[in-house]
Structures are given as C-alpha cells and as structure tokens.
Image (cartoon, rainbow, N blue to C red; front, side):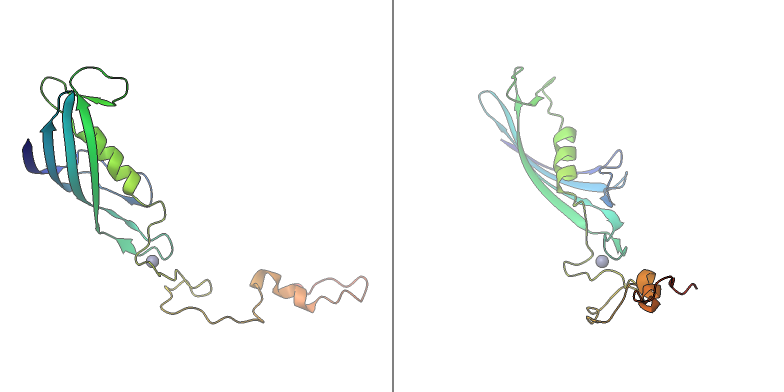
Length: 158
Ligand SMILES: [Zn+2]
C-alpha cells in the first residue's frame, strides 16, 4: 500500500455549468493506492477550488469542492472495469474529472437560503418579500381598467 499527497494544477477547465473549476487551479490530491490481486485500488480525496455565480442572485461563488472516489485499475483488460494499469502507472485524471463534474451543482447557491433578486429593483433580497395579495403583474396592469361589461371598450393604452 502506498499513500501519496500531491498538489497538481488542473490542465484545463472542469465543468461547463454556472460553477466550474478554472484551468490552472491548484488541486489537492490525497490518494491511497492498494495492490490487490487483480489490480490497484485507488482511494482518493480531492479538494479543488471552484468559481462561478449563484443561480439565484448571481453573487460570485468561490469555494472549495471536496470529492472522494474509489476506483479499481485492472492489471489486465477487464470489461467490467473502466480503467487499467498501463506501464505500471494509473492515470487518475479521468476518475478525478468524472468525480468533480458529478459533484458540481447544476444550480449553485451562495447560501442555502439565498432569496435571489428582487423582481422590481433587481437588488439582492436580504429578507423575504412581503406577500402582497393585491399585487398585480405590471404586464397585466392595464387590464385593470378594462370593463368587460361595456362592449367595444379597449384597454387603456399607455
Ligand atoms: Zn445567492
């Protein structure tokens, strides 16, 4: 068994969504490699910085993402296993990439209870908007002047 700690630079961006790992990020890798009779078992803990925007309020997010995975690298080609030992080496990049991409949220939030933006002012909400029962969508407001009982009347134009 061998345990390694490495810091590596991500060669290219990981992820395509609102939150991604930029190219050239310092990735902390903690890996335990165990020799089994049919392959090498890699158990890895990866911490990588992410960059992106909150999906509700567009605030910048830059926090570390931590993922773990266990993958068996087969000594001989094995259809049940995705990865192989090649030239006495295991290539950890594909499983790291897969684990990170799967862990990146589709709809990242700056905080779990982020309230998003105020639809009227566009400012970030710090408290819930009070429910106003009489509130009318401004796009429909001109219909308030429309009296259906009078034939031929059209909504007031702006
Ligand atoms: Zn937010």
